[in-house]
Amino acid sequence: MPKLHKGTRAVLSGGAVVAVLAVAACAPSGNYATRDALVAPVNCSNQTVEVYFTEGQSSLTPTALQALSMTRNLLSDCAIRKVAVTGLSDASGGAAVNQQLSEQRAQAVRDALASFGWPIPVFEVDAVGSEGARTGNVNEPLRRRTVVNIEAEPRR
Image (cartoon, rainbow, N blue to C red; front, side, top):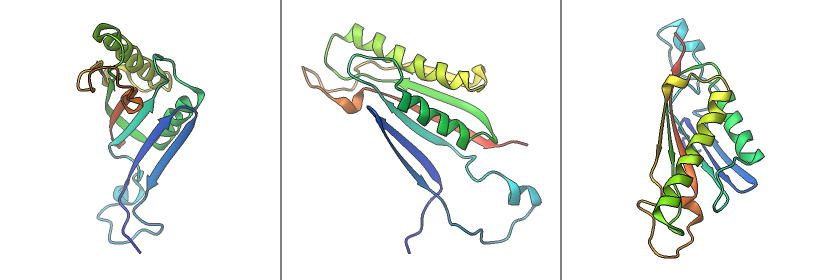
């Protein structure tokens, strides 16, 4: 049986959610040094979520909101230390328009996570527009996304 690693990655595309959850094992093994180590939430570790958008859009789909809600539930017993939200866009269209669109996408994701009660001071919002995307009229759906890196740890 292959060994699985802890972590979560959710990928959103249009109306479909693909969530890949990997867990260490069904039954705990090994020795626990303290009671706190035994009862600490398993999922209080850094997580990455990618939220994909429709071309030219910055609004979250119901599926995107559901995946963000699943992330919130996964980390509900954790202390959220930092949330870095980075908006991206493809290379179609002008640079200024793409920069604005990626900013709007990052803000939409930040607003959704903040509405869940995550503390505003932990957010870092950035947008890179089409920087790094292929140039020309290349339609790159995988660039139309926001990447969310979450630093979480067990509550003390």
